[in-house]
Image 1: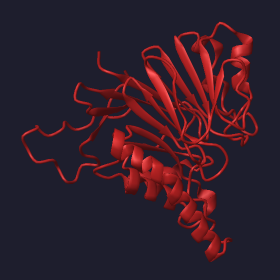
Image 2: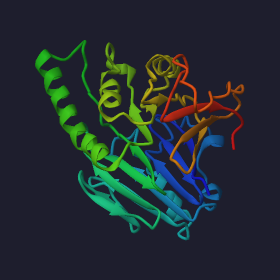
Image 3: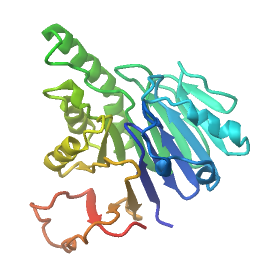
Length: 292
């Protein structure tokens, strides 16, 4: 059976990834004023459809850690739910606290490695049925060009590069990341995309999905349109409930399916040269179509 990963965006840095009975939930947050619509929220009925549920919380900032996630298990202790959190957070009765550099096998199908952050907590690399999914948390080049001194900016850049080096080594030694969620925060002003640009250049994930953009979806869509490349496709999921499906064939080739989009033109035959004007190229192809 070919792996199929269903990706859903909730709010800010909150996502879920579902595959054949396993659900991964990252930094779920209802919003400062509970603005995540009721119809887009995770419910107990939804959770009961899965055989394994893993809730990842990268750190304790309120926009990444919503205590509502602990209510799921309290309201239904039969849920097969495990909390994987940075070591500053409560892990509960069914949790694991992780520090940068630690690795944990979650089940026969899933494992996780924690990496450093340039803010509180950690970032997570989760491998599910061989698919490698990275959630950066607050790992970013946190510079403020209009406010910071040159020395502060240089120190922030060095911290960010140091935090990225173990991730770059992980890619060299164990293979490319299939999907990355990474911050693009417009509050930083000019060069707000410096962290994401460096990460794409050094780590080269197959697919990058921006997050942490404070509802500036139009700006993020423009970034994606101008910065996708041969090595890294980019997709902007900007509205609560936005989804996409990733389909993987036996050779690891990844097909991206976006719902409610016009049909894409067919890919060129394998024996021809790839079209240099397409939006993406190997190892990723983008095909719009009906959600599966």
